[in-house]
Image (cartoon, rainbow, N blue to C red):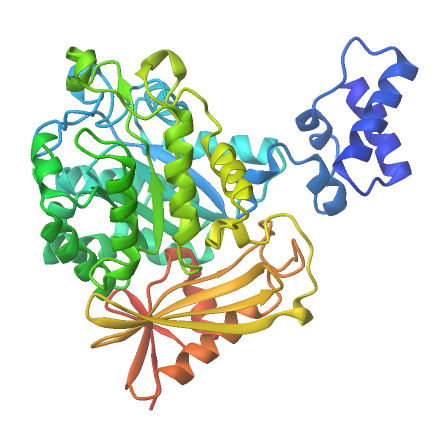
Length: 499
């Protein structure tokens, strides 16, 4: 710790402006003092008061990209359980493999889950402790429930799993409905809650339950838009199930994420691109976000029993297909993730490179094209003067309603955005300010907590003036924010009377 203290003293003296300058100062002190090793950033963070030295703390933050989207994500894994329909041919996981469904058990999140015996309270506690140690803010948390079809678990299991997670966030154990209400005043506020499920599991009752449990985003396994391929995969779902699920979820105000799997048995690059185009050309789909998981031949999956029967895309082919998608994706869609976090030793064949997104971007650049998705336009760690922001709006039809994507942008950068849906209700499905996560009440990238979110809410209210009320699909921890804007909790939404 003496080494860390000496480095911190020099950093406080020289006041570096960039992470590169920090590294040079660390090396300078280490050389002068003949350290056996350069102290890591988390040891330096332990020597400073982040509240007193916020800029230095930000420069020392370990893995800053973790919170560059404006919130601190905490992924937690449910215990191994079978899917209600059986096993898809590409799926490696499940109780028979001693891992959660659709996971090999060797992924970082799966290993963390197993290490904590799949206890949600313990997983959240460990993740928050790690974030604090690495210099990240933990007051705005996004809980992401992983491990398969959450809605297929028993109601008691769902309730206990969520109760455990909120016990850590709130600092006390409470019944779930009370825990959700109390979270608005908690040290760690849950601003978003994601659940995974199947399109066939999205019934009116289960959709209502997810909202009652505090969910704000739902991920569904679409995989492709070909019923014949689904049948061969033992997927036990039809495209019509996807259409119905999307409509139910959007009418309930959820953000909808599609999981797509390019390169499934029976698909080609041409049919994959055909499906991508359908997602954005047809009103029945229009997902808000996408996760792209090129099909792999993975140990433990039914497909792996006869490995010669299926040849998945290699890196080059997959990169070309992803680049094709990035060419056509609308600016109101976020490509949330590209490829699964499966360790290379578990992959028999397929994309063996872990940086497929970079390969796709390189291919897109070669074509002279740019991706317009939210992920590629978010502010991340850049600093932009909010006064340069320009208001923009996109209107499109989706699942029987009219959607508005309203945003503040500066040049090619997306500073803040809001999703408003008008059907039988006026519903704000998402409002987000981009840029590095900042503690509540403090600025981060220059746009966090600068009022852009409340300005977007005013615009949404004006566009909803023909309705009696407007509602917001809110995270449990954002209740007090919306109360300040004149909203009250009503039937699991924050609601404002417009009359």
